[in-house]
Each structure stands twice: as structure tokens, then as C-alpha cells.
Length: 204
View 1 (cartoon, rainbow, N blue to C red):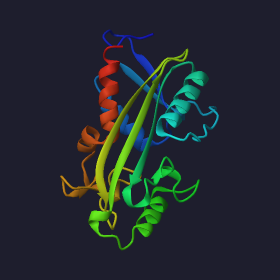
View 2: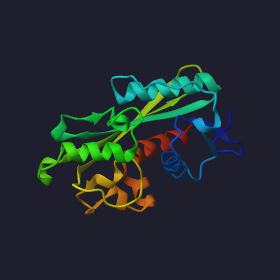
View 3: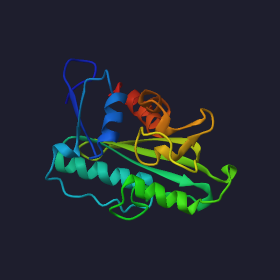
């Protein structure tokens, strides 16, 4: 196994095919002796059904399946958007809110339709992230983050992915879609979880 303090590289498979998410994670791990692989590097890996009842269950299931298949250390996250006015929906179903084959635009369109007519103070929302670092053999650690905002009435900005263009940050006066990537990767729910993971990885 590689050591982060030496010249050897540590291989970690990140359980995603999402290029946007992979790019964010690579930037967050910059400077560490880590080779970050993704599911795109293992085209024969079976599809992993995210049927857990919580972010942690889904992240753990993905990380375990990827590690068992590849024999490598694995990293997986499950993230979701919880909207107060919708009782916490879409939650763990965020990526497929408008259907199993839904694109980001489809999910945003459905969300905005359901919140149509609600005033800004009734559109509170929170991004959640649960991350699992899994070692071959079964040991794992979990890290988490959360990011508060509200749902804007129209998409703004073309940065990020997912619900970023409609997630409005009150303290900055912009949506996440309008944030420069380096800012998002420092303050987001995923960045919070990764900051804790990065700190742990440096002691690994």
C-alpha cells in the first residue's frame, strides 16, 4: 500500500461516473500522493443500485461494492438536496427526482414546478453529503457535510452540476451555478466532507 508521506502513490477508486463530481474531487485532493480512479476506469463493474434508506447506507453500499470488485481502496458519497417546503424531498432521490433517466434540467424543472408561487422565505433548502472511505477487508470511515441555502425561482449560472443553478446562497447573493469552481470546492457540502476526509488521509 502506498504512503501519502513518501514517494509511492495511493490508489483510490471514487465510485462515480460523473465527470463534474470527479473533477471537483481531484481538485480537493490536489497535492496528495493519490491516484484517483473512477468507475469509468472499470467498465465491467456491475451497476450498483442505490436502494438504501439514507445517504450513509447508499454511500457505504457503493464503496463496499467498488472495493470488493476492484480490490482497491474505495471512496463513495451520496448527496442530496432537502427542501423544507417538500418535507425534505427530493433527498436521497435527488439525482432521479424526475425519473430514473432524468437529466439535471429535468430534475430542476420538476423542483421549480413544485415550488411555484412560494415566497423566498418558504424556499429554504439544505444540501447534504455523506462520504465513506472503504478499505479492502471491510473497515471504513464516514465523513459528512451540509450546506444551507434556498431554492431560487429560476436557474442562474452555468457552473457546477445538478441543482447548483437553483441553489441560492443568502450570504453570497448568488446561486452555486454562479460561483467560481474554486470557491464552491472550498465551501460546499461535499467540500466539507472532503476536508475531513483529506485530513484523515494525510494521517493514513
